[in-house]
Image 1 (cartoon, rainbow, N blue to C red):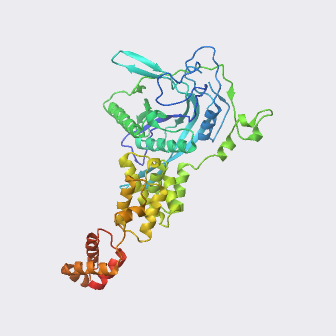
Image 2 (cartoon, helix red, strand yellow):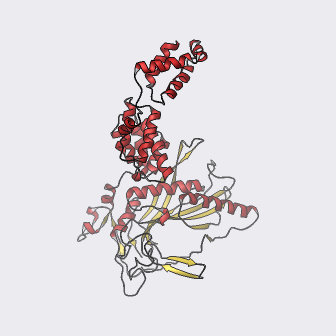
Image 3 (cartoon, rainbow, N blue to C red):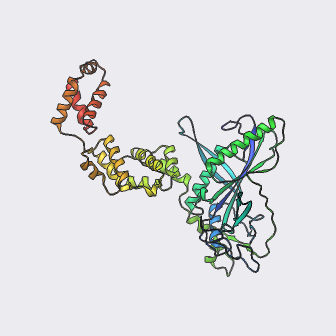
Length: 479
């Protein structure tokens, strides 16, 4: 995964190399070869069939939904596939897809606003079963086995050694996570074990052969993926600089796998389209690549490009929208209900709304402020009924109570703009009379001082004065 980056985007003196193995739990209601349900946090061993527990006399029936999910994820090349049952079963010799490519992006620069696009080759995508879970009780000195996960369908995506640091690996896995979620083939919740990563890490000096790799197993957080890789890179560099030897080993825990043929399973065949089906094959029972392609949703990279081109927002804003589940839909729903420009709406969505949700640890779907409610507030501001500062006050009140509309809050708290000409003339006159030095500066040509007087008027009106009318009145009285 980590090889020398001569441009030095993330590498110090030595080059690095290795590969990622991503295990993505396929989004199905039952397991790969049995009708046992799939669920998180169920009581131990409550979701286990005879076949999952490897009891004799049981034969597997392949879950077609699992195959289609894996094909959706890797459509470039497809082959006959032997899906090898009870012990952990995995494809080995004939994977679903090979020779793929994942394009991902990094945000760089002092303000994290420079988009750098990179690619990583995907060696293959294969189906496999998840295994049971060992629960170690150090107090009782015993190990308990929970087989709820045994037999759950996984996609294993094997990435080539094309990345140079933890940051790049994390960005690639995050992009993959978004793609899987968009396709609906994997929920991608890493905290529930639905997406796990094994990282193979090695270091080598520029121009020299790849070094001995170490595998860091079962990383279940994108943030910790970056940290684990960078830590392992530095550990290996330190070992070599001290004259030591890097060993081919598994870190975090010792896990060894073996492979053997599975005689009970016939080959799995993936077809191009209905025209390629042999006579007598029911199209509804076959996996057809072209049919799956036609049903694919808009993928994250295309969605980001569309947002930038359609609405004129900044690339970094498109990343924020796409990275938060449901935020693109929220943003576009607001735009449909208001005349406010997209570049102004994006600030409200990414700063005010998302900032509030992050602070309260809420998802977009849990927001008390609906798209239509935010659009109403922005429309009232756009029409000049409230100031920008008052609009933020209204928004904060809306986040506390979903039953109150923006207009109701404005009327209840008397936050509407003060646009009475006589009242504003009197307030402006008091401000002008009490600040002769500022008035003199304005009349001497320093027009910027006018903003100070406007701020004083707004302070007296608690931000409710019509700024256009205030500026006009102050100009009349000072120029």
